[in-house]
Length: 118
Image (tube, rainbow, N blue to C red; front, side, top):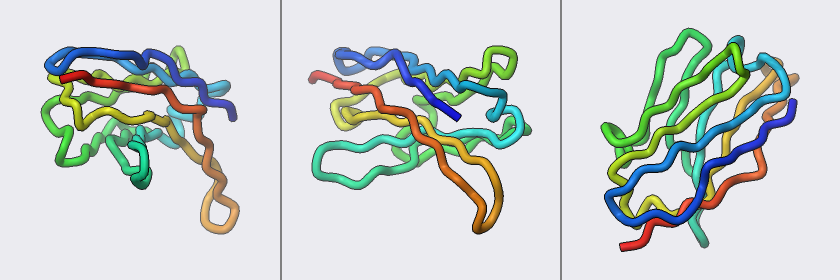
């Protein structure tokens, strides 16, 4: 499975961006996916996730501002980010997995930089 993110960039505080994550197969429809972010010198944190049935979960810091979705026909996931703040600046990664228990394998995209200026 290959994941390719796009849509990052530089935006002013209060602005919006939409990130995309294209998968090489129809894995989102069976296993869901998640978005993570990592700021310099910090750990990689979960931002949002969506299950194969469409249930979503968000980090408290982005609740109400970000929206995760998938288009299973296109094997693509999205992260709509509104009301962006400077503290949202980070490299954003999409993630999914295959297999279970000891056979689970996680897949990550290459990351896309999001920079929010004040």
